[in-house]
Amino acid sequence: MKSLDAHVAAFAEDLEFDLDGRALKLEDIWINILPEGGFHSSHIHPHSVISGTTYVAMPDGASALKLEDPRSERMMAAPARRKDAREDLRTFIYEAPKVGDVLLWESFLRHEVPMNASEDNRISVSFNYGWS
Ligand SMILES: [Fe+2]
Image (cartoon, rainbow, N blue to C red; front, side, top):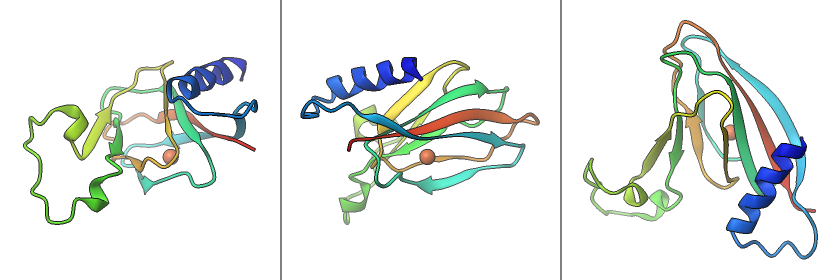
């Protein structure tokens, strides 16, 4: 847990949060075992500040994490972006982590795990940090 705390503290620093002298704290941690054909539909993590996942088993064909631009619900009648639009303008970003990677994001960011196309389990450990 200490190494996660250090990653989250560094991320909070990079985000320039004013934590008023209080550290972000680990509130929940759980394991995800996604068999072939399994998926986790789009969601956010309310009541948390930073959410993340570290990866235990990512067999060939295991799905990437799909992150959604939080501005997308405010884009009204705007046309879609070109497929080769630069990354910060894309509606969806796909991150294909390797075993041992730690991905962190702000908890308001909508995300999902598309269907696992591997015959083997995709295994990860997810967590939430809060500020209280
Ligand atoms: Fe999640």
